[in-house]
Structure formats: structure tokens, C-alpha cells
Amino acid sequence: MMRQPRSRTERQAEAVTTVVDKQINDLLGSIAKEERGEPSPKPRPSRAGKGKRERRRVVITGMGAITPLGLTVDEYWQALVEGKSGIGKITLCDVTGLTCQIAGEVKGFDPHNYMEYKATRRRARFSHFIVASTRIAIEDAGLNLSREKAERMGVVVGNGIGGFPEAEEGHLVLLERGGMRLTPFFMPMVLPNMAAGQISLIFGLKGFSSTITTACAAATQAIGDALEVIRQNKADVMVAGGTEAAISPTGVAGFCVMKALTTRNDEPTKASRPFDAKRDGFVPSEGAGVLILESLEHALRRGARIYAEAAGVGISSDAYHVTAPDADGSGAIRAMQWAIEDANLKPNEIDYINAHGTSTPINDRIETQAIKTLFGDYAHQLPISSTKSMIGHLLGASGVVEGIACVKAITEGIIHPTINYEYPDPDCDLDYVPNVARRKDVKAALSNSFGFGGQNACLVFKKFEE
Image 1: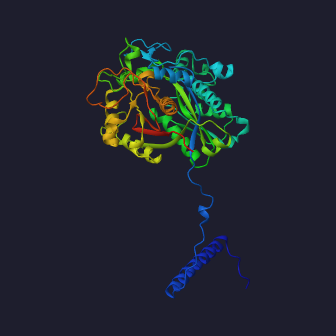
Image 2 (image 1 turned 90 degrees about the vertical axis):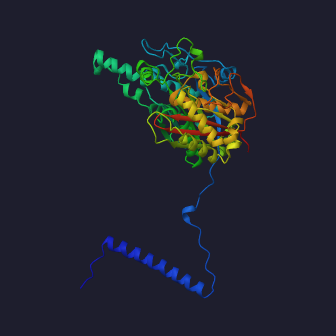
């Protein structure tokens, strides 16, 4: 009688049994040899570990910024050092009747200087800002994109709200003229991921692409994610940053009814006053920033100028409340500690902290307590300043422009001040570099970002040393 051919399942089962039997026999044989005093054979190297590399170092080679203090990094930094405020009356929309009528608006910005005319009509303001910042940063880095592998370049952008004003305008069109009168570009304009998408499209970046929307921690986390992508050898160059343009009636009103915004409308330039005893809320702002991150090998190979090293990232969640930070600051402490450890540093090796410092009563007090808990006695020796005292709160974009301030502090040896610090708060008793910039050799800087939903993200930047 002819034997029936075995099924595929039977053949696979027999193969597995054979392998298992061989492993058992090998193990028994090794045991027997050990009992006889014979040396065991050296284990073969694992194939799974083949090709593994040490974690790659990541450096910053380019920067771009569009802020309430200027349209270049140099303008922005110079104004920060001089302690100038970019806060003024809101002109972008009608905020009549709202308790806050001031903001940090970007002034003198013309998107046509950075992209084609037709393209500007098809993109939202937050996309205009990030495209402009990216173009500036790429030029600053001296990157010739035509010489790079598109698949080895990527982008991570953080933002909190996306095309909020454009969504608001679209809703008015719907109500007044009907839904079919909306522009066909409405959805691509307002989606939060379109900032990263437009960068990939315009600059031909075909590698890793992601959008981070962790509220006020978004840009900081975006830089941290880009850092990890390069560390893991999934890219050589990353465009990383954040953008926000949410100054609209609904956008401002939404924060007003939460009582999160300042009501100091008669003194716009003095309204944002982090850590000051008379602070009463943050100032809403807009803008964008970009860092060009590269693997150290790639940067050295092309002879790039290196500003600093992106050395550590820490990300945590409070798991406590939808808007308020955990009262003991434990979430912020974890993020700061993990970022410092990731940079292979100790807390007393941090020379400067760029605080989240929003100018809200609760946030500033809890951030101060978190710093004192983590750094101990050394906290009182640490210079801390809040960029938001001059530009307000860029929400999802705040982390990148504050990261740029950290990099400039390292390269220039200057720490910008916290302006409007006039009345000491017993609960905020650290060195906030009040009102006047300070010369200091900064070898390592910590940048803090804490957002609604208990999202915490921190970065450590180091002076570059080969």
C-alpha cells in the first residue's frame, strides 16, 4: 500500500521535534562532559547581536525660529539677552469681551518669503511658521539636501492644536454660506500632522516622520523622539521642532474661561512674570522653531559646524489631573531625572535650567518645588530663567524655542533673564536670573516642558566635545 504524502503541518511538527531533540541531546552531552571534567565548548556568538552598535551621539548643526521677538535666531536671542518683551495687544482677531486681550504675536512675517504664493493659500498659519523655520534651519546647517539620502532624513514636529484659526473660519463659512463653500484644502490645512507632512513634501524628506501633540510638552518631546531615531540608526538627519498659531477668538476664550490667562491687559510687556508673587496667568503666543539634529559621524563627515550635543531626554506622565500638575511635582521630577541620567550626568553637573515657567500661580510653585526636591541644596546655586517672561507661552512650540535658548546659552556663555521679576514669592525662592542677563560658562543645560494631561518632557543639551 502506497504511503500517503505528509501534510505541511506534519512536516513542520517533525522539523520542530528534530530541533528540540538535538538541543536536548546537546545539553545532556554538555552535562556529561562537565561531570567527566572535560571542558565545555565555547558558545558561538548570537546572530541576533550581530551588527549591533553603540548608541550614536547626536549633535545640533542648524537652528531656525519665528517668534514674537524676531524672524531669525539672532534677532530672537539678542532680544532675550536684552530683556525685551514681545507681548502686545491682540491684532489677529477680535477678542472683545474676553478677560485676556494680549498675546505674543509674530510681527512682520510674510509667508511668501519662504514659499510659493499658491502654497501659502493652501496651508494654515502654523504650517507657514514651521516651513519658514525649517528653511532657515537647513540653510543654517549648510545642508545640501540633493547630496543626502532622502530615506535617511526625517521629521518630527510638535504642536498642540493645529490649524485652529482656520478651523474656526471654516465653521463660519459653513454657518453663513453652507458647507459646500468650504475650500477643498480645508482638511489638509487644519490637520495637526500637516506641519510635518509639508516639511517632508517641500524638502523631500522620505525617512521617519511623526507628529507629537502632547500639549505644551509637544516640541520638547518631538526633539527627544528625533534624538532617539538617530541614536537607533534609523536616520542620519532629523528636522525636529514645533509650531503653534492658535490666537483666535475661540482659542483665547477657551483659556480665559479656565482662568489660565493673565488679565493684566493694561501692561502687556509686564503681564508675563514667572515666579513673581503677583503673577496671574500665562500669555498666549504663537511661533515656531526647528533644530537640525545629526548623528555625530554624519556631521563630522560633511564638516558641519556643531552648536551643541543633544544629550538626554526624559518623558513622564503625572497620571493625576487633566490640567493641574501633581502637587508633589513627582512627574516633573521623574522627567528631569531621566533626562539627566540619559545624558550620563549627575544633577550637580547641570549648569542652567530653562524652566517651563508659565507665570501661572500653581505651575511656577510646583516646578520650583520639583527642582528643589531633585537637586537638593544645589538647587539654590542653579541659575534658572523663563523664556516665557518675554515671549509668552507658545503652547506646543514653546519647547523648541526654549531649547534654542539653551543652545545659545551654551555657545555664547550668557543666560538670558527672567524679566518682570519684582516681588519675591516665598514659595519660589530660587535664582531666577531676575531682569538682567548673566555671564556664565554653561556646559550642560536642562530644558523643562510640562503640558495639560500631565505630559512632562525634558531635554539636556551639552557643550560639544569630541
